[in-house]
Length: 603
Image (cartoon, rainbow, N blue to C red; front, side):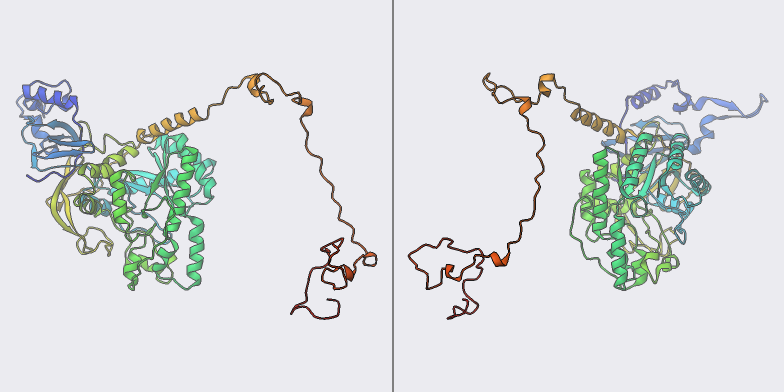
């Protein structure tokens, strides 16, 4: 039996009651939750002499028991088995009585919905090389069972048109379930009407803004926050200062730097820090919920000193690492700690891949390099190896940041994000001892470069179940193109808007008007010991001061000057015993000439 890694579940009384009923051999009132109806039969033909096939044999391929494992939920660990039927988790408990023909796996399991990727996404001059089939296939190989992609509308199409186009791509090729968020670069009344339709009719509850791409500055950001809050949608913002990036870009280009190293110089930590500080300040002041996406700097919310970026002489190697925001040197430990202590809520891959030829579009100018790196096939194993194995995070925390919290933010919980009775049967059986080596030679992606090349991790997926179907078994993938389904996301996720309501109640309490009586509104001071000052009279209150008119003093005539050399205190002809009428004449500025006193002359 393998050691448990991480799975979600909270044991419910309903589960225990079902277990008791099945152990007593009683028939549950809900047919879909009673797998013991193996004695029931159905007739395949109307002929009375025809053969009858037991129900449990017809659906045996859709039944699965995962046993002898520990389920690690975000709130605890339990030693229980999981019974799956028709793509749903039907039972959880010990010593389950199950129908014959059920596939049994002796392992431990967990479910991880994936939060953000870019598959088949158009760039300014090209398109990401991984489509929904290849991208979701690679994600499943790492233990991801649900993806959320970001729809990027083109200039000549509406938000709804772009969503329909993305859904058609995913419906044809996605191997696992998927949902969408919509990118906003600008906002007007027609787009606000579309946003309302997307939320109410199309199941979109999240919108994305990149501050470096958006027009309108703070006014646009505030408008987007307000619109999303009214609709019950969450605004996700990639925080980078558009103005600082433009300034840095001009300075770097003037110095003749056009290689990939220029990208990290332009997108310095200061650009991320300033953008994060500004967006979070606006959100806090206006009390609008905000999801800060793609944090690469451990000091993203503070003013920090910039760090020198390591540069690579290999253009291909350096260009392959260009992403937005850039990868930060030495930031992994701080970010891992942020995930562990709750400062950061979600770990996502920001998967967006291009091959060498596509990256070479910016060979002579880093501004033309398509932004994006791989991550869908490495996210889970890297996080486990770097954060859980070394003790920085517990398996429960690992489950929270990779599964439960993303599902709650998108309002997909508990259908996604937990292993519980009634939840989707998306389960990953995780082997914490299995070694995995990241390499472009072995990964399932179409890109010809892997930014994690040669990194060895310990802990990876052994089995992956999507919708009750085994997709990965002992390293062998058996995915089905187009198997995934679209997940409509309801607005007003409680994990976000419950906190918002609580904060609003506190703000309303602090901003209640103060009731004042007529006496309180009286501007006169109160009587001191019952004695009122005789001068306290409203008529004595002075009005505004009269402006003083000033005139320049007349310049005295030099002919009328009373200047006399004999009045000089250093004049020997003056009696020193007699005090001069004007001991220091204002017209005398120099007592002695430069170089000292001389004899005779005017001095």
